[in-house]
Image 1 (cartoon, one colour):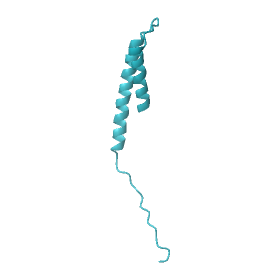
Image 2 (tube, rainbow, N blue to C red):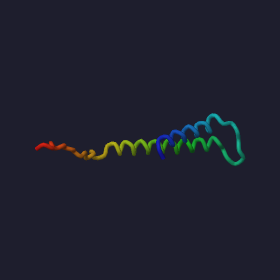
Image 3 (cartoon, rainbow, N blue to C red):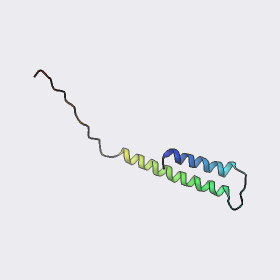
Image 4 (tube, rainbow, N blue to C red):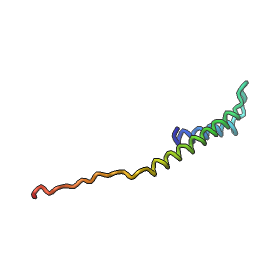
Length: 72
């Protein structure tokens, strides 16, 4: 799950929790909203930790290109 997906889940959960007043039989939309927000927050934290871990990795070995003088 990426950062964008996590933010989308948080936003969708907040909409279901705070803005939707409709009711469905057998489903509490406020609870579904809270669950989506929690999953989105967990996914965002994991994505950010993974991104920070990847940026701290070993330095990238760069190849040195040396052009030789063709007249030597």
